Length: 250
Image (tube, rainbow, N blue to C red; front, side, top):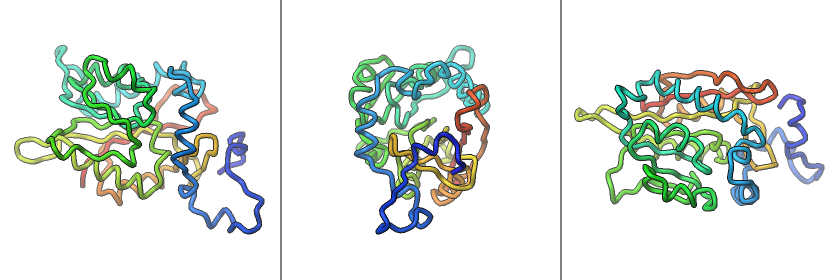
């Protein structure tokens, strides 16, 4: 990555027995145990979830609401247009409470840190709570639950590339369809974008910030097409740019 102040967080080794960094796949450095250890020590509030930038939550949610509205998901004459949604990597449910429950009848959540979901489990409108990592989550084959919207934000960097591809394929399998079998549901990915064509590892929380190029390659491998994409506006300039993708099966 570019020599910015984020460089100090990158994993650099002086062990001459290790291969050069350029030969090591960036995502191979991701360690789920390290990531969970980090998040276990984070406060269960907006400021904790947003790395000290809790004040950006409002503008972030506003951008997300606008993006969904352009996809046809909003309130129409006061009626919710989403039957069931899933939030991956939900944390304390900042997006579930601040956006999805206002648009959906039911929201299921996937979040490995149980202290974050304790309050979510009893919230009105919240359905299933899966205390699992995204790499561990599989749709419940005992039910035929389908999702109109599957929202993933600031969480996919904890998955290795192959895990992310497999996760997206599983999401694809449970999107809503109409009576003719046409897919009507959508997967949304909203993530930081590294501004170079490479990916950057952050040892602080054991995550990878991918380039847009990498995301597009993974979407292609997962059999997904981009139906809409936008940048999130209004965030502080020192942060990585954040891009939203709406995805459907090819």
